[in-house]
Structures are given as structure tokens and as C-alpha cells.
Image (cartoon, rainbow, N blue to C red):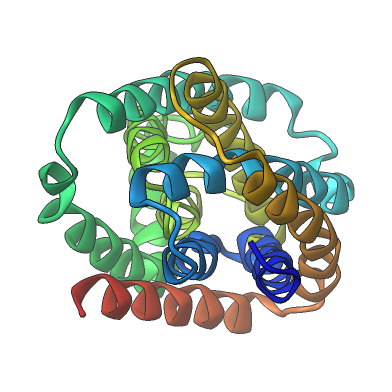
Length: 253
């Protein structure tokens, strides 16, 4: 890899770390960049996953204030992400790449629709839950399996995982968008970290690529936390939907 290519990969890591912290889908920047520089697809995917873990940690640290009081919720939902991430990483190693080609765009489109309609749906969910004593702190009953399913998807590919998580949390958990973003960052970190461990154990990692992305994504995580925290709920929801649409278009073209 030439010095110019190394700089561009690191800059792609900065952009990916920023987007991942606010929304998710940073993989849609780093993965095509690696492919353009001749990195084989599977090596690019696994090296990218490993490289983005430090950026996810940076994003979690940047949103640490919004995590206050969410310990029990994060622990409960984190187990779903852990199990889902392991399953998704193993599926990536076992199944042909075409296996998820049909379902991935559908999941992203569904996530975008749910993010846009989230407030209306959330009010309906809250009204039904009220008759049963209200929404628990960790969310309604289907949140845990939905987070696990998002973890499977995230461990397998990961682009727009954040869109799905924000849709799930925004509808099934009663809290602010900023606190949902903080929770989303932790859950995505769990998925990325466990997938990275599986890949390190059994796959070939390009450590130069992973290191460059890691350096860039750590910086991007802090940028994303600064920018994301300043976005009002409506604008944050619009940004999430916009990123989801871009991810959908990128995967379909």
C-alpha cells in the first residue's frame, strides 16, 4: 500500500468512525475504499470489522454522559447483541456471500421506515403497554429478540446496523433519542468486538489496513459524539433516515 493509499484509508476510517457514532453505516465508506485499493472482499470485510472496534469504543466514551442510569438496560440488551454478533460472524464464515443479498436491503428499508414512523408507533406501543403497567426500563418484550436479530445482521455485514438499532430502541424503549444513540453505540460495539474476535481467531486479517482504520475511527468517534450530541431529536431522526437511504441505494446499485 502506497503512502497516499494509506492516508486515504485512514481518512475513510475517520469518516466511518464519525458516522458510526451518530448513526451507523460507516462500513459503507471503508469497505468500498478497501475494495478500490485491491483488498480481497472477505479480507476487506474482516479487517474493516477489526479496525472499526476502537472507533466504536471511542464513540461509546464520547457518549458516556448519556449512558448514566442505563447500566441494567445495556447489560440486558448487550447479551442479545453478544449472542447475535457471534451467530452473525459465524454465518459470514459458513455461508456464501449471496445468502443475505436479498434480505439486507429489506432490513435497511424496514429500519428507515421504522425510524421515520417511530414516534407514532412508539405512542401506540406505549398506550398498549400502559394497560399492562407501562413499558419496562429495558423495553417491551420484543426488544431483546429484535436486538439479537440486529446483532446477527451486524456480525454478518454491519452496514446500517445502527439504523436498525435506533428503530428498535426508538419504538420499544421509552427514552430520548440521544440516550438511544448512546445505547446503540454500546450494542454495536459488542457486536463488532465479538465478530472481530471470531475473525482474529479464524480469518486472515490485513493488520496494516485494520490499524489504519482503527487510528482514523478513534478520531471519528470523538467527532461523531460532538456533532451527534448537538442534533435535536427531529434532525437526528432525519439524519438516521438519510443515511439509511444512502446505504440502501449503495447496496442496490
